[in-house]
Image 1 (cartoon, rainbow, N blue to C red):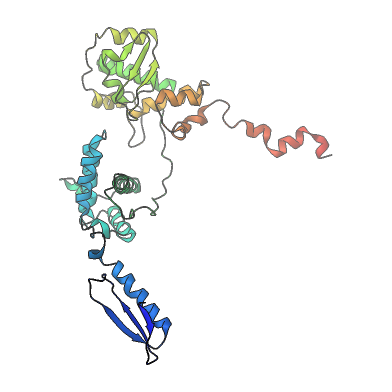
Image 2: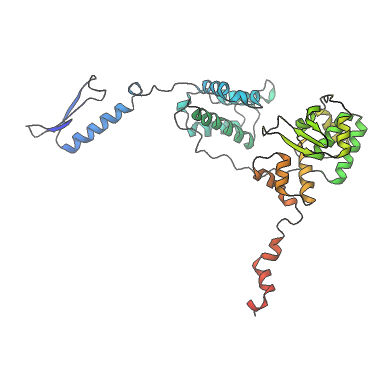
Length: 347
């Protein structure tokens, strides 16, 4: 027994924290309870010694980011952009030992980001510009995903230091879309600009709900009679959307010729048409416009989800309020309306 009573009336605790081959620990106490408590404490302390168990993880955050990139991040569409953002986070936090990062460390890092006290990675005067809470939330999600993915891959066994930290609440962003009159102004501006390829890409986006890059990178193999299949999409799933005969004929007439880059020209035609858009929204307004008019014309929200390629119906539900009968049941199914409809209840 590691704890036993001596002939002197004392209680002896004799234990081997490092195993039988290690150093023996002996101590006498006046009571058995004290001896047992000392044994528990001594053995627990030994368990917390890294050289007795799994080796202490001393990898720095930048090393984990590099490991994540080689094992998973390199497969992402925006792999270079994501890696760059993670490098900024790592440098901004002082490249700490990853196992020693605490929620407090992250809280102070994002506070400094919001106050513009950390380099943004720019080589200009924007290097220490203040960032928005939305930017900080994105960084939070990116770094949290690194730890989660490495844990799934068996490369990280400790808790995720950002797991229980809440992101900042964000107000829902304004979602711009074009009216029929604005669409006519936009198409007239495209014609005035004289870039037929720009005009055709705008038509594809407005007719199919495609993202700008999806429409601008169309190849002849993606076009079949009155249908177009979008590949290499954001959701990594191909989707096929019907085409009108005139639009199909225009695309076929190109004989597979690739579109020339004309993203920046879209900015010019928007200004030429006199259309003002919220900050941060430009070509995506075409996708919003398609979805908004689809619902206003009585389209089905599930069909819209399939056309837009959303994996989560909650994303598509942003457009539900455009439906003609959206929430109209509130007029007929509220309690006062039902009471008026059944006068016997209130007579």
